[in-house]
Length: 249
Image (tube, rainbow, N blue to C red):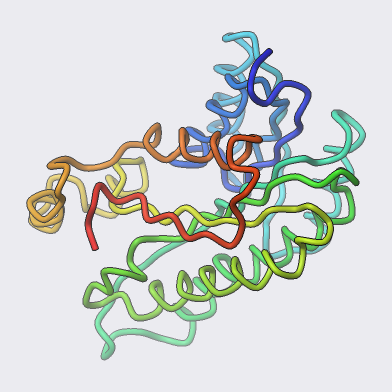
């Protein structure tokens, strides 16, 4: 029997990058997967196609994590198609770096609305449809909270909030047998980091040079940790912040 057989997982922001990698790995481990997306329907459909072609179960459902109405639809459709949620991966997120002289109120609200409010609303929505036996919530934070790179004041602040929320909700939801943990990746090569210009840049070269394991990350590095946290293998872990950065601190 596969590790996540008969489990139902919702992954927010799963049309590409780390979210897509997690969706594929959870499905390969036996979970029925909901690939959530805000606007990238083609990407989400591609992820679903890859999962089903490999023999897994998946559907794509649109929904913006900052919109409670969208989220109600997301979890209603999940429940109708697959049943109660066992696993929620709060992956949807945005980032933008900028020196303190450059940041604006719009930058602040864009990042906090998605990275923090979106996580809270997604969790709130999922709890209304969560399996009564409990399950696992996995937040995707960032190693920036340990590294604190320059020009990342807003983004690092959002991920610091994710760390704190993870530990609060671990205590708050423990009585429901819902475990809450966070994976905090270092730099991972994704469509997003290519678009942002990080891949191939001096920033990436410096990041790899300072990484004890001597390379950059890829989505599978994070996805395998998510499978562990979603499964009974991590049944005694909650409130943990796992820095998945190849050793960068």
